Amino acid sequence: MQFFVGPDYYCIDELYSDEERLVRGTVRDFVNAEVLPVIEQHHRDGTFPLHLVSRLGELGLLGANLRGYGCAGVSEIAYGLIMQELERGDSALRSFASVQGALVMYPISAFGSEAQKAAWLPHLARGDKVGCFGLTEPDHGSDPAGMVTTAVRRGDRYVLNGSKLWITNGSIADVAVVWARTDEGVRGLLVERGTPGFIAREIQGKFSLRASVTSELILQECAVPRDNLLPGTAHGLKTALRCVDQARYGIAWGAVGAAMACYDTALQYAKTRVQFGRPIAGFQLVQQKLVTMLVEITKAQLLCLRLGQLKGAGRAEPTQISLAKMNNVEKAREITRMAREILGAAGIVDAHPVIRHMLNLETLYTYEGTHDIHTLILGRDITGLSAFA
Image 1 (tube, rainbow, N blue to C red):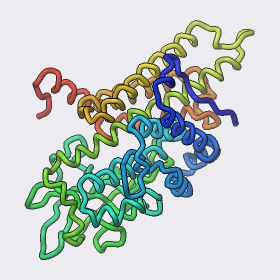
Image 2 (image 1 turned 45 degrees about the vertical axis):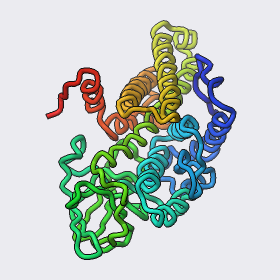
Image 3 (image 1 turned 30 degrees about the horizontal axis):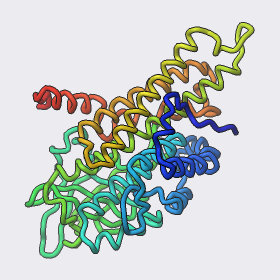
Image 4 (image 1 turned 135 degrees about the vertical axis):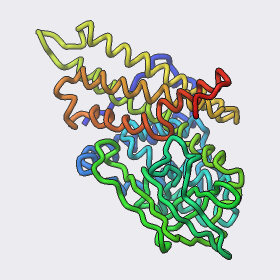
């Protein structure tokens, strides 16, 4: 198996620090050696490579941009490069790391009590515990404010009732960060696996993110101790959306990794596939596709770099994260389709990674805010007028 590393047409590599390049190289080597040789079979089987979770922990890739409690504390750009390289392997692995770090470890770190941080963060960083994030509901995806899951205070416990859908890691998670309506507004609570009334069911029949665990969470008179309430979530849904922004940031970088993988595959294929007596890379229409792919990857790389600088300085606005997530996923989606066209019939079989990335990006286009929702978020920001109901 031959591995490629993707284009760097504007010498962006020079703008990364030595540590950032080292982190990227470490993850790239891991993906090449341990992910790519097995991921196609997991995609075929619809199974998650659970054996890689401990390796993610050993390499310090879980919650890598957090500090303390066993977290690596790398820069926001280094974290983005981790997401890029993991997704170059497969969206499933990047999604796992993104949920674990941005949607579970981040809210515990930012909004949890000292006892909650000490109890969970070291285990989650090592990968010997897995977490999930329960916000989306069957009837409330793009409109989380319509949430119907409740947590009612009864003595020294909160009793939860409701359900959550499309939850990455749900049925393998040891702990779920569940968002529910309380008398004090929307709050986050930690619900541990095995709690009576807590059921996680894996969703079957997916044609996208097949190597990822996606679940439904059901909460029926599920009682958790009062101490499981995340104390810093008193500001309601706004707090949950801060967590989502962390995940969207990683997705913006991850989409670049998927695009790079497809560009590399298409370029190498076009150079070696001979039709009409010469490589198809010599035909104008093929070159047009390859150039379009290169241009869009380069623009996406620059978006990520600048967004990472802003985030590292504490200046990244949610709308700026929306722009990068929206643009990079859309362009990666287009790139996978152009790569599929260049490969022709070979593009629909998993001997090449293109069709797998193409299918996975359909999920990225929808989750953590659909493309249309991010468009309206930006429209509201630049006009001051909301197109939402």
